[in-house]
Structures are given as C-alpha cells and as structure tokens.
Length: 41
Image (cartoon, rainbow, N blue to C red):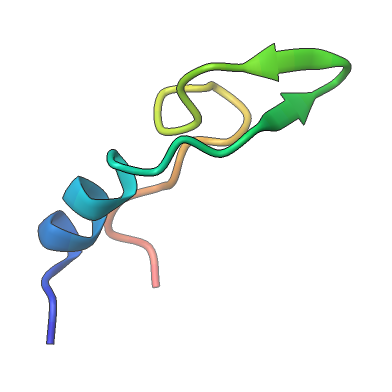
C-alpha cells in the first residue's frame, strides 16, 4: 500500500490536459481550485 506522499509524487508524473473556468491548467497540483487537500480522508 502506498503512503499519501508516494501517491502525490506519482501524480506529479501525469501531464493531463485540464481546463478550469476556461483557462488551461499547467500544474493541477498547485492550482488554487484543483489542488488536493492533504490529510483529508
């Protein structure tokens, strides 16, 4: 089983094509609307 940190590290490798509110999102892990909340289950 992966830890939360391992999971977030793997997400950094993805390069999905994401648009939020009509604008292209380059880094979904740091985007203020899309970023994951750590520690919430």
